[in-house]
Every structure is written in structure tokens, then in C-alpha cells.
Image (cartoon, rainbow, N blue to C red; front, side, top):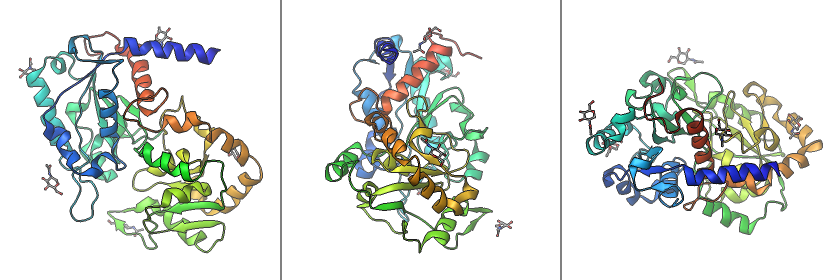
Length: 371
Ligand SMILES: *[C@@H]1O[C@H](CO)[C@@H](O)[C@H](O)[C@H]1NC(C)=O
Ligand SMILES: *[C@@H]1O[C@H](CO)[C@@H](O)[C@H](O)[C@H]1NC(C)=O
Ligand SMILES: *[C@@H]1O[C@H](CO)[C@@H](O)[C@H](O)[C@H]1NC(C)=O
Ligand SMILES: *[C@@H]1O[C@H](CO)[C@@H](O)[C@H](O)[C@H]1NC(C)=O
Ligand SMILES: *[C@@H]1O[C@H](CO)[C@@H](O)[C@H](O)[C@H]1NC(C)=O
């Protein structure tokens, strides 16, 4: 009953909350979509959120004068390196800056509030710092011109960090809901899981010292070293396009840090019903009011990685079925996926809920910067 009231009061928000989506020249967004990967890779929430908002008739407004919030759709993660295929985000700052120049020139709303009611997506490693390496990200900092705005970002830690020192909503990385649906058609959540512990991805045997830092703080190296010959562990170091079906066959899925603490594995594990084992000290997880992370996942400290075998055996013998029951609740899966047409409870819906709460707290109808 209480839950019902809660949903009704949140449903009322859709009549109330009004978002204006800027129409920017196509070089800021549409043009990048000529590369199919742009709307599908792990940073693609910048595209997915834009799409979902464009389709969200209930609270999208075409009249900026009645808007509570302004969404600035700039895709910064789709300039893929011709060398290694990974996104190069060196141009992110200048592209965003030029988008802001465009809206300042053509509309009065940025100037009115200095951007505090404006929303941007920063969906790659160190979020609003726009650099893939932590030291450089911290050195560069959050661009001055974004400091007043609200950032939707995948990067989050539960301690003070310069790259989250801005009003932000933590969001999950993008995984295509279509790919999840297809995989689950072939292998239901409650089907046979014959792999106890699964990990596929980069595990360097001799990680390079990159100006004093080692990939994954060598956690993945340690996993490989300790468990490569262990029959309980299915560890693979190479890419395989069918890896989602491996996740549906697994009980526990390791989600160790990479360079940044967050990983798309977290979303894929949850969506495919494999208990995520989070190994990333200090990580902050998205939508904590909708997803009770402690009830659906396990957290293992980085320094305890050598005890994974024992820890997971223990869980398998005690509370595994409780965790799986919580994890297999469809509401959990829904909360982490972005749909082109927003559904109640999905990732875009969670973002709007968070934004609404922020507005309700401090910004609502206020037209002057709060400081
Ligand atoms: C894309 O990245 C390359 C470097 O990898 C850079 O030379 C180029 O200017 C970037 N393109 C845009 C449009 O920013
Ligand atoms: C916004 O402010 C800038 C500088 O403060 C000014 O150059 C610009 O003309 C203003 N734009 C509008 C639309 O008022
Ligand atoms: C890694 O390299 C840095 C120099 O960039 C050096 O100071 C440090 O001692 C090296 N660390 C290890 C463990 O080799
Ligand atoms: C399951 O047990 C482990 C310890 O073995 C504990 O850390 C975890 O919080 C428990 N999870 C649930 C949902 O009970
Ligand atoms: C909005 O704020 C009012 C007054 O502070 C409060 O009663 C209400 O519960 C809030 N609504 C939400 C959805 O946070």
C-alpha cells in the first residue's frame, strides 16, 4: 500500500516535471551515429538517454519557458581511435564548450541560471573530468563551464573525488536491452547454471607500470594467478561475442575494477541473473534507492581477492538462493537498462526520479543560482 502511494506520487511528477531538450546542430550528436557502435557501446548512455527523453511525451516540453530542466545532447564518446578502436575523448571539452556557446548565443536560459538547471551526460571512465586515466582526469578537473550544472555520470566513489565534485546523478553503463532480451530467450534466468565463477576480459599476467599505476590495481592479475587452474573458475582472457550466454550459465560473475571502478559487467550480470561479485574498493553504485545492491550482489575487498574461492563456497552453501531470489526480481533488471521508449522503473525513469528529487529539494521553480 505504501509502495503504491509512492508510485502514485512519483507518477504525478511526470505531469509536473518539464524538460526542454536543445536542438543542436547535428555535429554535436546525430553525425556521430553514422558509426553503428556509437549507440551500442558501453558509453552509449549519452545516446540512449537523449533518445528516451525525445520520446518521453509526458514531460518533454517544446516551450523552454516552462521548463524546469534543460538537456544538452552532446555525444562525446564516439570518436573511436583508428589504432585500437577505443573511444578517444580528447575533443570532449571543446565540443561541450562549443555547444554551450551555441546555446548561449541562441537562447537566454544558460545565462539566466549560469547553467545550474542544465543537464549533461558524462558516461565514460572518470565522468565529468573527461579523461580515461585517473591522474590526468584529476589534473584536468571538471571543466569550469560545467561546474554549476547537473552531470549524469557512470563514475562514482563513496569518498571525496575531484571528478564527482559537481551536482551529479550516478547512472549505469549502457547495455543494449535488445541483446539481453535475445539472450534470455535462449536461456532463462532460472535455467541451469553449470559454471560456478565466471570472468571474461583483460587479465594481464605482467601488467605494465603506466606512470606508477597498474591496470585494475593488479587485482585481475591476482585472480588469474590464483584461480586459472581452478575447476570452479571459468576464466577467459579473450573477447568472445557469445559471452552473454556464458553469463546465463554462471552462478557468480566477477566484476573487478579496470582503470575505473565501474564496469559494464555489473549491469550484464544483474540483467542476466548472475550474482555480481564486486571487487572495486569504494565504488558507489547507481540508483541505490531502487536497487538494493547489498541484497543482490556480493562485495569482496581488493586485498581479499585471494580468498574468493572460500568466500564464494561459503555463500553457495548458505545464502545464495536468497540472493538469487532478490536478483531475479524483474524490477531490478529493469532499473539498469535504458529503453528507447522509457518504461516505468527503467534507467531513464530512475534518472528522472533522482532529478525530480533534487529539484524538489533545492532547485524547484527557483530561477537564480542557489549559491
Ligand atoms: C577524433 O580523434 C582524433 C584523434 O584520435 C583527432 O585527431 C580528431 O580531431 C578527432 N575528431 C573530432 C571531430 O574531434
Ligand atoms: C550571455 O552572456 C554572455 C556573456 O556573459 C553574453 O556575451 C551573451 O550575449 C549573453 N547571451 C544572451 C542570449 O543574452
Ligand atoms: C612504477 O613506475 C614509477 C615511475 O613511473 C616508479 O616510481 C615506481 O616505483 C614503479 N612501481 C613499481 C612497482 O615498479
Ligand atoms: C550472504 O552472506 C555473505 C557472507 O557470507 C554476506 O556478506 C552477504 O551480505 C549475505 N547476503 C545476503 C543477501 O544475505
Ligand atoms: C517534495 O517536497 C515536499 C515538501 O518538502 C515533500 O513533502 C515531498 O515528499 C517531496 N516529494 C518527493 C517525490 O520527494
